[in-house]
Length: 96
Image 1 (cartoon, one colour):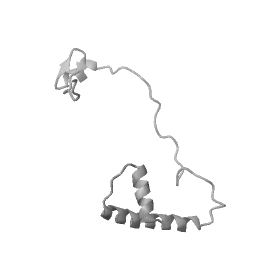
Image 2 (image 1 turned 90 degrees about the horizontal axis):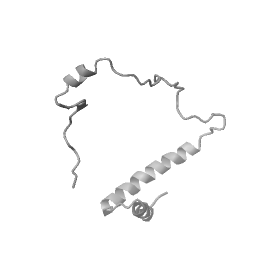
Image 3 (image 1 turned 60 degrees about the vertical axis):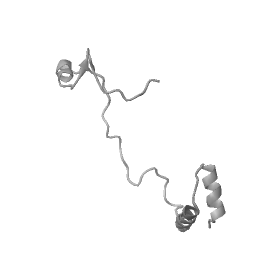
Image 4 (image 1 turned 30 degrees about the horizontal axis):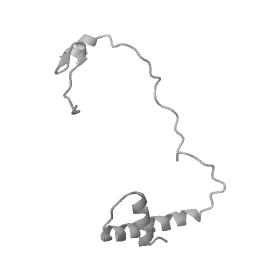
């Protein structure tokens, strides 16, 4: 179903540089995937309603309510370092 030329074209569009070995590997793998999809398309799903999940799931998250923590000082005091009313953390960005 898919050949090396098509794999090269997809790699070009995705801006990927593939070695000849990778082209061969992806040709084989993509061909297997497309053959499997072809098998799935042979199934009669006309009586199967479209779904987004295999099982029904309801929203299990709680409502997000903003509220101050009663022991703010206890939290700040447990931090390794603090600066005023804030946690002090290591600098991770270079400002150059």
